[in-house]
Image 1 (tube, rainbow, N blue to C red):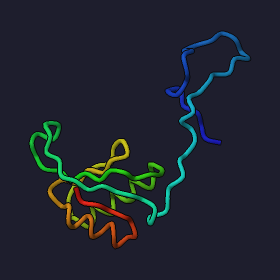
Image 2 (cartoon, rainbow, N blue to C red):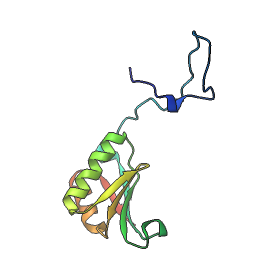
Image 3 (spheres, one colour):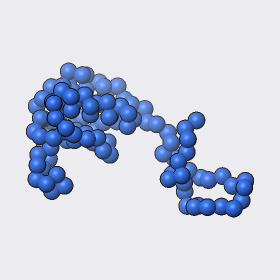
Length: 115
């Protein structure tokens, strides 16, 4: 059983009752990762202000666990030989690598679309 974090507790901060059990948010279940052939990924270029005007390639639409999306993000960063990050179910790759990422994803069995 996974250790329940105090950050997921609902409403109650502290209780003096020794028999009290905290209610936790339902975020403990790990989501099942869809097979690569069922994933519908969107690859697009972004240069918003949060990246200080620099171009970044974003990959959205991944359905699965955080661990699996991090593995996919690491694969893309390694194949493109650039930096990036994985946050909020979105893979960010520094620079304009849309064509290369679509080729990599389709080679891995994913259904990727360049927008």
